[in-house]
Length: 430
Image 1 (spheres, rainbow, N blue to C red):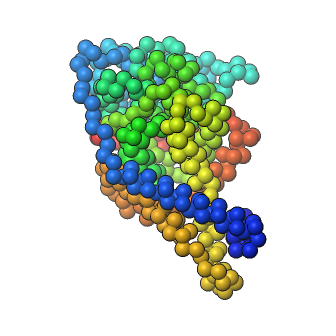
Image 2 (cartoon, rainbow, N blue to C red):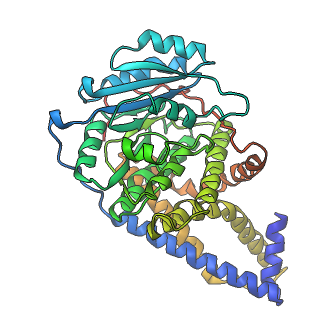
Image 3 (cartoon, rainbow, N blue to C red):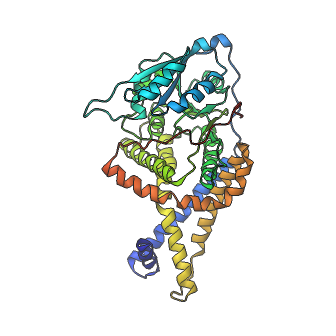
């Protein structure tokens, strides 16, 4: 609040500082309008149609990595869901990855694992060695797997039965693709208003923005699960960064540096949204911290991989972080300005360009969420679209927590608890 008051005072002053701040605010306003227009274009761009299916005998061996930690209660449902995948069982290598310190999950995984499932136990880390993180476990399992194609699912994931076949067909049809992303959607958006907002966010991202980036040939951050990679390229970049807490986003830009493209397919994976505030804050602060880590690492060599990579690094990570950082202070500043103007404390009118830019930006962001809900078939989420600007305000505290942790605990991984809401039975729809 203090910063907003100082910012308002600076803008209203006739000093050189006031002129600089007004010009800076004007620049931010025009950037927000430009981003809004990109979102409109994304809403109007049709999604890629599925590639023609390939013959059964041409399907490649597929490795599915399933990192588990303190999730013994999730093993049965996960195995049941992946058993329903429509893919030749003799071409599947499904690895339940357990940490050596997690005896309960190991025991349950060993009880239910039958071919093509197998259990792999990751040894404990040496003192001073790599942190005990999901990407470390993935790297350990990758070196002991055999699939030509590799994908990841989390403990609560319920992938569409056709997802692996569609991914294999897409890779065959697009030799220049090094990775692709399937949509992540939530099955428990009715649990709370927070879960509904999370659902709108994911629907907009995975069914509107990512398909647009795909059609435009632009690289984008991969999601935490249901990302599919060619094994050769994955090994060429050294797998996942064990020190990055959003290893998926980091991996996408390292793969893009090879010069390959990242694509998108339609068959989704249903996941469980965090539906209460405290775990949502912890999860979101980890994501923001990882985005900052990824941006800093890749800005060391921003031009490797071509202009598309550096542009998308700014558009998907850099500007997303700046939007979270400035949105709450800007809203507070505008509120204070309106109060001061209404009470007669100041006479300067609010510049119309600021309000117009904010309105365009908010409307375009809400449109992405609404179109995403329609494309995902989650029509009940449309009633929650008007609350999206309030949800965006909630991102500011996790951002501050992420900055603090980046300095104090940069590699700490806030584990998200799964299984709070039971997954619905039956087939996952497109």
